[in-house]
Length: 210
Image 1 (spheres, rainbow, N blue to C red):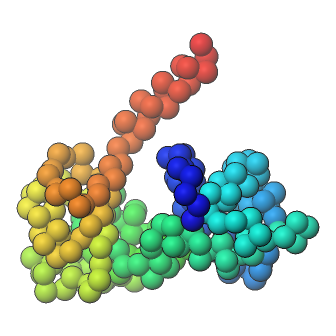
Image 2: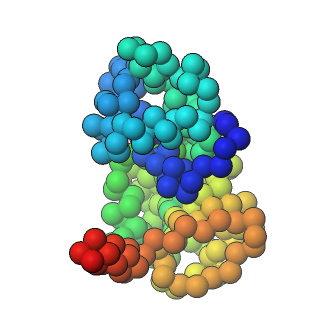
């Protein structure tokens, strides 16, 4: 990857590109044009070319008239994101929200897949949408080897669950809890809050109107 500093916006588009490229690869497309990726992602082709210029020398990505090499770009983006297609992910909390997340079946197109999930309700133990569902009390005994990412969709005992996950080696948490919890400096938390997203949307709409 080149040494220029990439903007946060550029980095945020890489997973979008990766998902689209995996779809192209599954469809048997070995090469692609920036205009084709633009159509698949909704990102301007000029923006795509600029974003790709941060990754490697243009000559290593593709040739004019032929396009970019799909497999090469997938590998480069995998390396940048530091995640692979088989990255194991766990889900804690299989209520209405957790079930919706679990039902979403496109993990294999991006950075990994949910390999198991946990809930406090003993009656839910078994299997849900083809994924093993364990009781939260059995977290330590059934935790998948090498798992570093957890999705939290719970509302009770959040800090206790977070502490247990970190002790097991989790380094990244996608947080749907809307509850403050502490993590050490080497653990990354990505908060997902629909209310905040709507507020930001309204502010952006207001800015356009002005």
